[in-house]
Image (cartoon, rainbow, N blue to C red; front, side):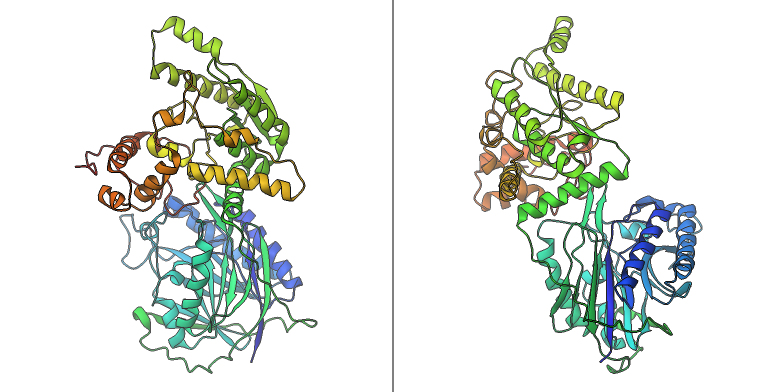
Length: 586
């Protein structure tokens, strides 16, 4: 049987950086060539970055993507890499955008893959299944392809597919079986969600069985606004054997020698394929000869604990948001509480202590232990620590306005927000806000106060998970012989906004062990009141919580972006009207 040395390039592109992404492809193709690769694959839309969203509608951007692809093919040949077939995702179009007045039926923008060889494009494939759920709006942007591209490479018939093609039965993978291919390349921009890696391997196995072929699955890594991509590239045989699997959240070159059936052995039939698809065939005349020496094995990476996985996702999402948007540093308020402590530890892990400014903003209601905890966290992490008391500014407001109750509480939060934004304007920091998903769900925040900021690293993290992350991060530090970053008293004390004497979150909210399961069912699971009550939750508590969630939609619409780690994050995932009189209690 023929053997192909596959190289899956798990890389971190940046949306819109065509030159930088092309350079990434050239650099990693060189690494693959040095490893003796005979076929190289890069992720979905690696040349443009993913997702490009409404950039699809700019004809200038589409033209730039197509021109960049042609330059990349020529540059790879000039680099001495022209004999090595390279599959790369990019943005193409065979007609005007579908939203334009001159749109043509069945034509438009395409989520595409191109196989580059000897300075040119020898084959292209247009994504067939277009996702239109969750964070995906591909029906808005792209026209689906109706052909399966099969390329004969090194004596093996190889089918080209893209991301969602793998997530749905039928279509390209059923067509691949009928076409008799030995290998299916599947290039991906598959965003991270907790435990998605547990779903992915069984899914790839199902598609490998459906296609009757080995699948090489390559996914990108990196942060893009709210999304983070974790890699988890892999190679799985038709019988479900996992040959190799890459690590999560790091760039990685997965190189593996794969035995494959010779072309034509499966007796492919190009007529009447699944979903009405047709086959387009091409061939690569020559590829690099088999490398000498030992067999290349990519290895398999064991999964990590949920907390470790989430921490890595949050660190990568924050790091890329800051670096790709070219912020020099970040600033956040340090209350001494658990949320700001976890956010600060994430920022230090993502950027280094020298790029993180933590500001204690005490008022007359700030407890001594909270001030001490903020200072202790700063000492443990080494971040730039400052103290800016807010009470004199609050008193000036109160001397000129008659305020009481919640208005005074909110005033304190807004004074803190003004100080953080002033430091941002003066020194160039990005302000991080630190409200968790539970608080965001019930509206437990002050607009233009503690919600102020350009990015929220814990926006999609339930409060109960915040505590788990803090304990895991400290334990992980202890295992490595390092000082745990988060003071134990920040973890153990009852949560409080400390905006009035003796205030605790439990004064106005159910305990988080009660609150979070209701919120998870309502927000993530779309359960209604009856479903939540049937699940065992107290009806009165359910009614109270749902009212808080429903009336806080206007706050969430104005909240900063933050890294998505759950199946349904606030923002692109969950789109509800602000003006909405429907209530689950009727």
